[in-house]
Length: 299
Image (tube, rainbow, N blue to C red; front, side):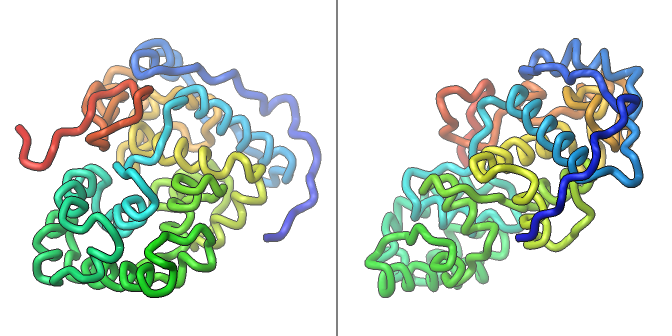
C-alpha cells in the first residue's frame, strides 16, 4: 500500500453542519426532517489528501454513533462456521445463509465431517443459498484442506486462508476480523459502492479499493469501519433508492440527492431495524436493537 502526502486544509466555506446522532427511532424523526432542506456539500474538484482523510474519518465517527451495535450479520459460533457461512453468502443474502446453516452445521459440525460429506446430500442442504453445486465443491475442498493441511483448524493468517478453495481476500478478511481479531477491510458490494458514492475513491477493483481505504484509516478501525459502512448500505444508503431524506449523515454526503429526499417517503425505504423490521441474524448480539430474523420456513 502506498501513502500520499497530505495536502492543504480545506477552505472554511466547505464546512458542513454536524450530522445527527441516530438510533432507529431518531433516524425516522429529527434527522430525516432536518435533511429535507439539505444540499450536498461541495467537495472541491481538487480536494486535497488531508481534506479527504478528514472528511472520511468524520463520516466513520458519525457512523459509529449511528450504529454502535454494528456486527457481522452471519450467525456463527466458531471460525469454521464463519468461514463456511461467508463462502455461502456469495450471491445471496446473509439472512438466507443464516436460515440455511443450522441444518448444515448439525449435519457437518467439523471440517472432518464436512470433508466426508456426500456431495448430493450437501447440495440439498445448501440449495436455498443458490449456486449450490459450485458452493458444495468449495466447501468440500476447503474442509479437506483444513483437515489435511491445518489439523482441522481454520488458520489465522491471510496468506493461508486465501489458499483454501472458494476463499478470496474478502472472505479471508471477514474471518480474520471477526473470528481472530485481526484487522481487515471487507470490500463487498455495499462497501465498494458507498466509498465511491462518498468520493473516497473511484477505484472499482476490490483489491485496489481495500488498499486505498486502508491508507485513509488506522488499522485499528478497519474491521468496525467495514461493519458500519455495510450496515449503512443495507439499511439506508441503498443502491437504487437511497433514503437520503432519512439519512443521519446526509450533511456529510457529497452524493446527497441521488435518492429520495422527502423525509416521509425516505422513511418508508428504511430496512431491517431502521425500518422496524427483523434483522438478518437468527441469533443477533445482545445489544442489537432490532428483532431476530425468522427461521427458514417460519411464517
